[in-house]
Length: 156
Image 1: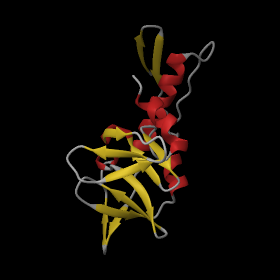
Image 2: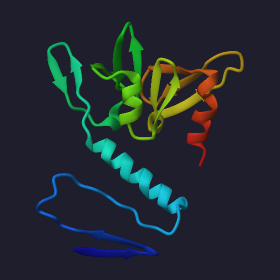
Image 3: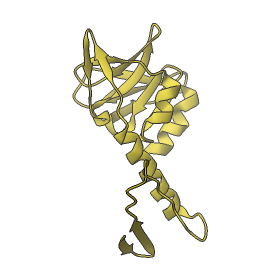
Image 4: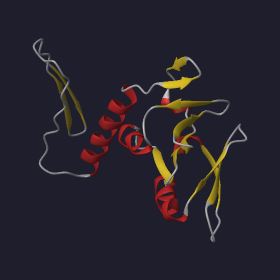
């Protein structure tokens, strides 16, 4: 067993050769911001470790999620866009929402955005706001229904 203490946080690692899965338990007196943050970080790490396969023509690709700018529906297909390319994935948008780290956010019925890659938002009070990425011509639109959630995740 390994122990580490940081502030009031103790981390224990128990090695069990009979274990078939890795399990993390948070034992605390109550849920506070620190506990929620730790849970979120653990969940995101697990999502990052789970792989998503991408396809283009006859090839299968394994890209880091950080390279993906956005996912969008296109005629029944789900496309993942990088700055210079696009790939297909076999997941539906709702499945991606469950699997992706929290820095991916749905911004319309047909688009999930990597908020870490966002460069600018041009707000449109009457309709969808234009979202741009640095170093690429690609853009997407955030619908009015999702705009507030996008602004909240970007707020420091």
